[in-house]
Image (cartoon, rainbow over all chains, first blue to last red; front, side, top):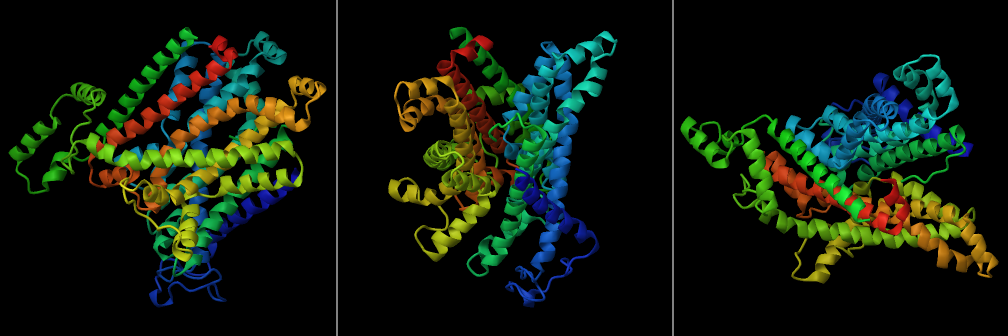
Length: 271
Length: 314
């Protein structure tokens, strides 16, 4: 299964590197339009061709990787930073009213498809990459809250927790010092999966115009721009899509590999 | 079972109320006065106020909430501010695109996933299993709207088997179904990949159970034991996922509708957002959330009917 980690890690590293390099260097400047040079097929000067404004597609992909990764990382960050403490709190106070409130709150957020959250947020604040982050982040909160609560509950029954209690530690300290380290692996695996879902969600939101706005480059926006051009210049539509597929595939393989590596007992189906 | 159902029903109603309050509250904090948006910047103050009165915007918030919910319960979703027609009619026109699309996609997804999952599980580790699992890995990584664009490029533009978009209406059902075929495939494939994985792992779990060994000892071949016993038991978790996927397909259809220019709920909601026709946004969002909550309720009930252990737990 280390093959999964190798291939997944390679793809993830490749796109992360593209995103990082874009801060220092892109083959062409994507802010300047070069209309006479539009819709070129891949060549020596434009390795992946040019779009309908004559912008270099490779440079756009690099800048788009930046947007995708930033949105997905921050959205997963929101999910972990809010969801995991909520889940740990619910587990520490299991069976209480607080537990019930947190879990029912989770169910409520779960009832809103991520796209619907995005629509509501866009309806209020207008479309932007920040709002896409918030929408995907909110969607991630119940995922991490449920998972961390579920993982924490059996740990609370273990003897070493009893020992910690006897030694006078509060349930908050126990959660932080003993429960959290024991569920970190699980969170890393889930984080990788949510990261890949975040990339897909960002692309979808930008595609329908609810995410990153021009001039911010985004893979989803590139696809939206390319849609009417598929018959004239298929590569303009194919390349950004392939970038999304490879990035998501890489993260999923990495997640699978990490799960097998970190917890050989769990061989659950991904649903 | 009755106790369980009653308890679930109560939580269903509470969820619906909570969800409606959230949606109402969110829409209420949206900046911008729809009345002045409709009349333009040069509107006189008294005309504006009259329109606000007529739209019920001057009523206190709780009253407006109750009016909204009360109206919804009686099938009156209010009147669209831009179309000037009842929201219920607008939704009624569009739901007959979005709903059939979701059902069509769900059927396709199930038809693809069941055989794929069963073949993969029964030939675990073999070349068929490896290639099916590889395909599902790819399937979950492909954005459905990009897949839709490729389908258009290949089957509409190059081969000309289907039209690239639009919807002719249900006057001619065959034509209508044909125009929903590419969108349904695009929606279904990533979901089929997920479902096939669930089917496979659920089947593998069951194939390891004692009752399969008993069936084999009784003289059934591996294949017979699989089909007569394991598949039926493996279906339970799969049905749950199918239920969850339905709500996802209905909401996810919003994006696919954009690719194929289908006049469904997605188009309605985007037009309404840009026209600040919030009453339509509010109603469509509530409808989608309603479907999600009710489908989850139905899945819970179905699950508990099949598996009595779950009733005891809650």
